[in-house]
Amino acid sequence: MRFQRYLTGVAIAALLAGSAVAQTAPGQQPAAAGALNPAAPSATPQSPPAAPTFQLADGILATVNDSVITGYDLRQRMLLLIAMTQVQPTPENIPAIQQQAINALIDERLQNQELAKYEELVVSDEEVDREIAAMAQEVGTTSENYLQYLAQGGIRPQTFREQLRTQIGWQQLVGGRFQSRARVSRGAVDAALRQINEAATKKQYLIGEIYIEASRVGGQQAAMNGANQLVSQMVQGAPFQAVAQQFSAAPSATRGGDAGWVVEGTISPTLQQALDQLAPGQLSRPIPVEGGVYIIYMRDKREGASASLVSMKQVMVELPETATEADVAAASQRLEAIRPQLTCDNMLGRARSEQGLLGADLGESDVQNLAPQFQQVARSAEIGSVSSPVRTPLGVHLLAVCGRRVGGTEVPDARAVESQLFRQTLATLGRRYMRDLREDALIEYKQ
Image (cartoon, rainbow, N blue to C red; front, side, top):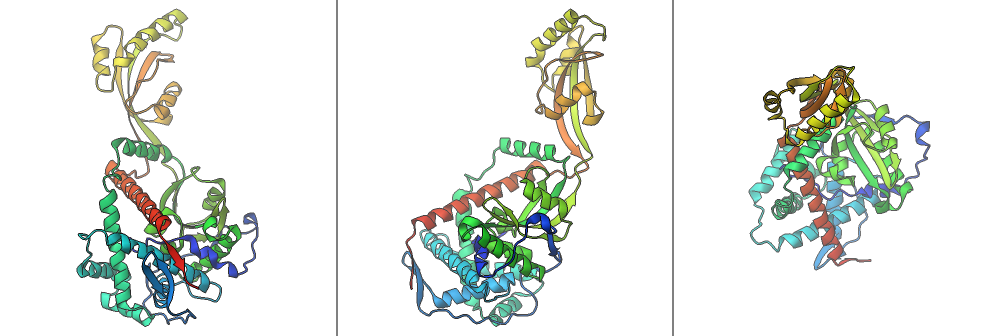
């Protein structure tokens, strides 16, 4: 699994409440705030930033159990936050950047204390070097140039390396501790595949998301103010992925805000309205929802699949449309008696072995092209199930749904779905682990 570099993204950006931004009702302005450049670098620019100046107290600022955080530590983390997100420091947002930095340092101290309990878990210099090389490659430069860029922004390479060492170790610890609990059952994979197939005929949106949680940042208005600041910075060039990694409270923050394909009708009406209005490449204005504020980046859109395809087999008793109710009832009773014994594999053989029964493999068909009486079974029956008797002008039928897929849209295979579910479960367990450590810690701020 690719190392996620910034696992401490919390919605601190919304503390930018010092910036008074006039708000208008969502319906009174376009959904889009501007367009983003998808080719923009996801981490660092090629030219180094000037190191901002901060007025920070010297000495110890906070203690986390028996570990200290100094003014120097805080300044280094603030500089790194600015360099990686390219959110430009202003008088309005410096307090928020400082709060985000102190929270990240607290989490890092707690992670180091937990890692110290596992003597066998040691992250080598070579592992850190490989991660720096991968980060540099993402922006088209060398490890040496990457570290030089940070140094020119006031960030000591050794400080940066130790931060990476902690984050690599933390991911290894979470993976080793929860890997067995994160395993995905075959039933869960099958259920996810069914949902994907059922959703594939609807409109779909490939989005990035940033979520500012109001309860974490001082209320809904503070969340709106902070979201407006972030939107402004991203329209001016701050990379969406880097901002999401650092500032979003959504689980997708560790993936740079990548929420994947979202299906029409599966989200709140407020968000659905914004998705319908945004064009690919556009960044939304802040979207207030219950409990917080979203920022959406529309990466792509697609229509649903043009066809829903189903594979079916049948056993039937022929009866003309003029057959009496008694004949229909007798045929239905006969089919109902054998239904529990039928499967997709044996039903044609069973039909051949009994007089008065006809069996047929209906093959794969577009649901829309089936007889109206068959369409409800084709759309809703579970794969492998056999329906109750169905009456048509030709007779009385038992229908088996033996497979279902969509046409016109790529559907992931079972292995891809299993991998995605595993990553999501592991990330959830890791967040709970970190939450428990924070709740049990003694954290004191020095005046």
